[in-house]
Image (tube, rainbow, N blue to C red; front, side, top):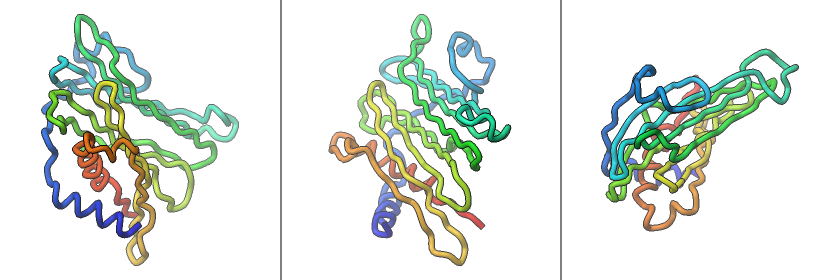
Amino acid sequence: MKGSYLFLIALLLTQKVFSNPVEFNNLIKDSPILSNIKYVGNLKKSLKYHDSRGDHVILITQKEGISPSRPDVSSKIEFHQIYAYSYIIKSSPKLEWLIMDSIDCPGLDSEMEFFESKILLDDADGDGLVEFYFPYRSFCGGGVDPKSLKIIMRSGDLKLAARGESKIVITGSPPYGGDLKLDSDLQLSKNKNFKKNIIKIWNAIVIDKRD
């Protein structure tokens, strides 16, 4: 595991910038363009960008509540959902893809959050089609356990992902956790630039300092 972690750090140091980062505009909640777009949950972030296919809008939303599987256990927030929608804007918005995930943690500590500052829009392979990289974390447990980490990349019908756990760092103790599993398609040569981007984002989110 140590060798794998050092390899990721080396990649980060040798690849300091993303391939072709894409500019985007953050949209406010009452933006007219959002009035005809349907989504579930509370809107947390919305952005607009352009590529060779046209104009696109991405919405990130979250929904929380009591556990639907054990509503008798607690009135605490123990059920978490996260969504990322992509719409292409033609005469009317059309859904291109949807990322959706949830955790149900009756009686346990829980959370689900996305890394807003690490969201990336890029054209890593230079084909004029933008990729969206969405990193987020979740936790369902207790004690000082690692959190689950995911980075989902979408571009049209293409979906690639990295899944693993945070690396716990506590002063005076050896670190633990940090396991990473990449989709097998990320080993293909045609996806090498997507893999580089995913690893760079992973290195930026994997350290989980606990004091």
